[in-house]
Length: 366
Ligand SMILES: *Cc1c(COP(=O)(O)O)cnc(C)c1O
Image 1 (cartoon, rainbow, N blue to C red):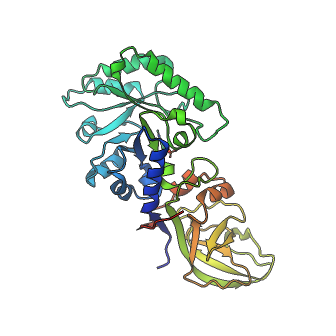
Image 2: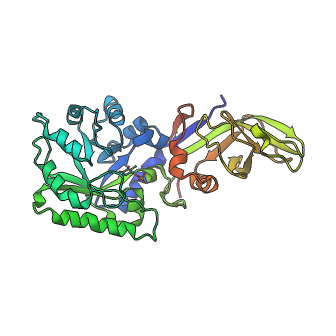
Image 3: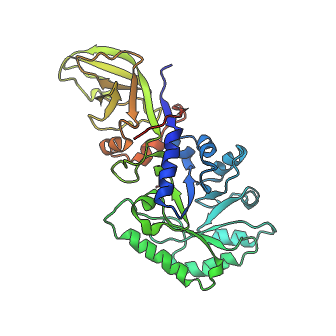
């Protein structure tokens, strides 16, 4: 069967968790498995990691419930909190711990008549300016949250970096300083629970950001939050498909929609069952490589919905059925990110449901 496959090596994920634990030895771990675990399959990754991490992190209620419905009992951090239409009772019943980032959420908590309490994560905006309370209003809102009878004390506190991937930026240290200032400003220290500010970039590059809890997403999957791959991480995903045709192609002839590429010489073209319908980006520059039989060859012409054409060269011995790797351990997704100008985060997350996930267990000894 010639289909696009997302091959996920579970042992690589385990290796990465162990490595990240070594990097942050005094912190608890949230494994971020939002967006279907960055296309690695959130249910499988949750089954794999539930006894190795302290929390799972997701963005949406529906993602959290999917885990609960699959028997995952690990505490879940809901990074975007509850939404206006969400039912708070479910968060309480299923131990889904919301980030609290807006006044309206505290208003809603104040009206709850439940006796069971909810564990919350007070979200401070230290510079990302997306979600969270600004430092000038945070203290009052924190105390207002603490006064809700439904809210479990102490209250966990979190923030998020905007530029942890930029090792030269002063922003990260400024954000850490604002975070610490806020904690200092709370006189009643007994209200302060676990603190968390670092995601993958923070864990790997800013040791001073490692607090009680670290939140790791992309690094779990062996992908770098920076531009360059990280040697100690093992990429878990290999995105691949197969050649379905090899064709003789004449010098000066174009291929594909819009005739955007013409061959400079007689050659052999390979047609691969892969396209933007599987999540491979449509707009890519010339010479973006794929890997066939250990050899890098360029994609030519326009990526279409179901097919991609590659220039195999006149001496190619490739044949239909040969494996074509779009990224994986031998062709880092970071390299494709550099070619395409699409971040590694987006490349792996944008895969569609047509690309089927296959799990393997392969130990890489280095
Ligand atoms: C997505 C997300 C993370 C994980 O980020 P990575 O860079 O993938 O490690 C952590 N915290 C928050 C709030 C997030 O939204």
